Length: 526
Image 1 (cartoon, rainbow, N blue to C red):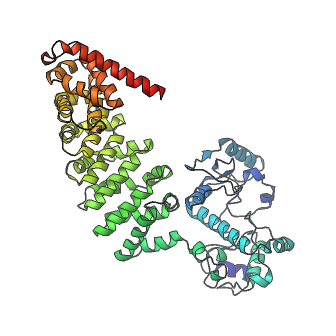
Image 2 (image 1 turned 60 degrees about the horizontal axis):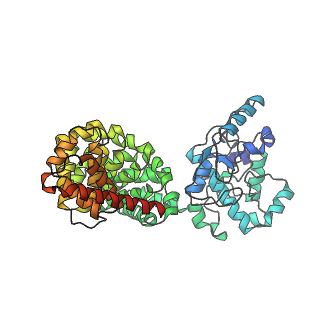
Image 3 (image 1 turned 135 degrees about the vertical axis):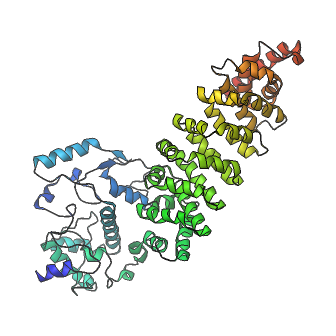
């Protein structure tokens, strides 16, 4: 009993006794009878939410997610490489089989491990693997003592080696701790070792970084009371994730996200900017987009849009642009009222922020609900004004938004009422001498083509705006995509050429059609 009490009170260990050990970690007499296929290779426990990776191996979802988030790109059990993007497929059949087996054998159904527990389990695995790598000879010695370790790498310690690791509270050797834990029914690395007691000589294994971990070091800075330290942590994440996909995946953890998000409300401009940029970088991988959104990041980004820190505004717009690429995020971003501040930034923000705000609005506008919010916010007038501006980068993106708005009857009516057809024709005419690859002319023609659908007013307004000339120029000198759109528009308008075109219009139009058909034929052959 004294030894058990010593374990329970050991420094750094949350629990060690049989009564306080989480159900997921307890080893019951039935654990040896668990079907191997039902057991997660990482946690060595029955799986509550099994998923399959590309290699065909099943894991507990939370455990394998943490494995990949830490930068590993191979299957934990088989060692086979796993290509990105990593896809985790729910194994519903296995889940049902586990539930049925538990009910039949009167075994409690497994519960999904918490993030904290899954993190602890994975850290034990990593420690076990590293120790087994450094001390491979200890595996045979472990088996000779009859100790069954929960980890597939099967860490063990020969008495001559383990005596140097002394428990900081009980003063007993690691060998004694393992034996006592086994007697108590805890088959695994004792918690004092897993939580790094002060007397554990990690330098013997060269595991300082492995045990402390990059995440812990950064978290310490982010959660520091002084904003200078917080700036160092945010700047470190920003730097690490600027170009590295692996760091973006590894550092996108619940703990990191939870520590970064409050910093977006900082009154210190540099800290706010670095934290927002770091989060924007973390949103870039497809696997992270929903995770960041579900961590509650969207409202923080929206508040940053309303701030006065231009750098942070640009990063927040970029983050919303990145999140909006995922269909699951489009509705939440719109519901949380991101569209009005994005429009304001598009109107008066710096160029970089304008471009990202425009792209965020473009992707949001694929959703009908968000197109309605754009119309309610009076976006058409602003978009038409920016489409005719001098900045090609902004104009081309704004025209994409107008193109999406024009895909529905409400948007077409709003654009026509704002004299949009005439404005778009003027944009084509104004940029008639632009290079063939000019995206503004192509997107303007695309918007006109959208406005022509189910719109009895289109032909009259387009002819009144003298659309034939710029469309003819575009059909003759544009790129292939532009030519195709221009020819389609000219076909709609061909019945009524303007007076200035005269009798030569029919011949010229036939030549344009032949040229466009020839381009399409060459493209198909290519």
